[in-house]
Image (cartoon, rainbow, N blue to C red; front, side):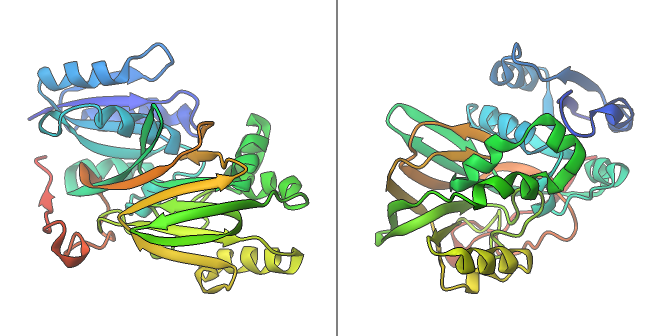
Length: 318
């Protein structure tokens, strides 16, 4: 039985229950536990854990925790990359939802025993002297201002609805960006309120901003929101909540392997909650980068269109 590394974020929305979750995890085998702090060199920790025989990493936290672990795992050679299990302890847990991981913590932990392990895509984002990865969604433009408006008090009071609460002030003063997006060679140029580059389906508290996205199809979903007037804004918001906003004339939608982006003024992004000040230029899917435990409802079979990635799922070794 392989060793497990249990990583937890003390600042996550449900951190008060982390000790009980850890006790449940320990029933599946030898477990080393570590609280994630700014002092932890996570890449070095994962590398040393692999040398000790660790083949499963459990990330107990929200999307920010998953983002940190994904970036550290991608620093390791693919042959030394443990599998990743997610226990949703955050405010929104958007990517866990895309992977069909239950919100009920005992059921989420039990996927270590009953769940499948599936190769999951991540997205590489790069600019001059800059490179990061993310698993869920990069949101650029006015959505960054919403993220920056969120205080700890708003998160604690509103929970997953905090993102809607944070948008109230931004909606009254939307910034317009002139963007040029090269999507697998196709050029799109327009004035925009924001852009989403999605691997997962939901963002900002399970809002279905990319309802057609799949984390194992070898593609990223690019969603460009044109600028407009107040009526257009209301339509976009209402259709987003109904999972139908891709049908709006204000939205340009593409599924691609690569995106090259420029904008004026420079468009900042959040990567699963992490604010990026550098202007991103290139987005590229990294197919099947990390093997992850997923829930039974996650659609599998053909792991990518046109046979890009051969289907590969297997039962857990536990």
